[in-house]
Image 1 (cartoon, rainbow, N blue to C red):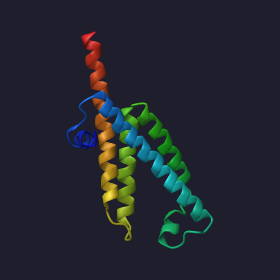
Image 2 (image 1 turned 135 degrees about the horizontal axis):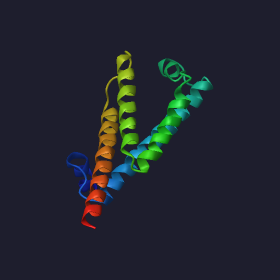
Image 3 (image 1 turned 90 degrees about the vertical axis):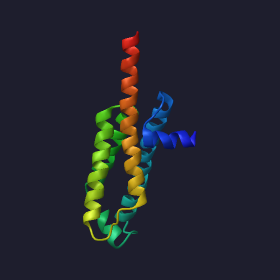
Length: 138
């Protein structure tokens, strides 16, 4: 199963079950990102985090961004292509802003998130194509 799932990220999903697993992984990643960022934001409000990370998390728009990520994650779970695309764009813009700062380097986790979000978009497209084929055959 793991090898098939890895192949699904490279070649695209082969069946609907695989596509739904890719979507669930992307939604889980969104939830994990929200939990970690919210936790760090709360700690930064309590002045536990100091230095560059604390200054980065001092942005008052973080709760709004987290709420929007939760909404788009929900609609990605509901297989809406526009929501998955917005999550990908949000990730790319966030990475671009962080890379423009001097202290952030483009890491493996950023690349993994990129692959997972692109995989979710491909999975949603695959599910929509399969449902259209089913409708045409019926």
